[in-house]
Length: 355
Image (tube, rainbow, N blue to C red):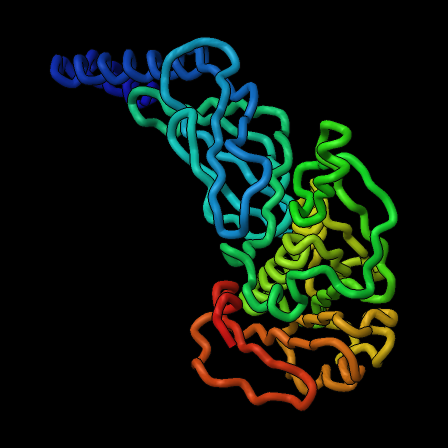
């Protein structure tokens, strides 16, 4: 614009065309003003990025608030990237002003990257001033278990204390303890709530196995959500749960404060392994001897449920295979496998159905 203004002034002055001379002068002034504004104008950068929450459920959005670094006028267009910790996925978040909302977030741990504030001059030229902020914190996107829990878990495990349990100690009540374990006689004597601790005398905990030999996609995410829903329902009954297939070895989690968070965080980090062996583990290796009287084993998988029959053929306890299929798959009754109850689910909410 400045060059065009200079040419207009020269031609107007040399040719005596006063209109061209005036237009060239105006163009030169506007160009100089725009360059000066872009070069010397006060524009605040992004000093800090705040997230509305550091833990959300899969599919939820995160509200971002940008804190201005410095003073000055103008409304920036702010953008940043969310990078998956330890992965290659990246999400772009953009918005005009000092607030933005992310797209629906997939499950995983996402690192908030640098924020970039971009300003345009008043004439709308392609001159921008870009200021970046340091990287922000981490947003943990957990599985999305069905609301209200899984009703058939309590029916299979039984809400009463297993006959194999024996009371071996008393301790003070902690938030999250099963109220049925409160020892009222001791509580009245001491003036504080006392809880009976139980020792496992033979009944095994419930086992939830997530089959990670699957392709990444909606069906696998449904399997993860279902595994979370079953595990949390077991903990709500005051029973321990063993998570298998999530870590290098089975992980036993005792009921109590923070137990649900441990389950959700473990399932947040799990990733599918398409190249894993196609065959399920042999019987006995699945739950390391946990299939005893009164036990419950639940397998969440995207593969053919019949594959799991040899691994779940122990004569005691209940076995359920949750077969996760992509959303929108044709609704049909799944073929049942002898000795194994099969549930076909296209969404975590399907677990709440009665059977």
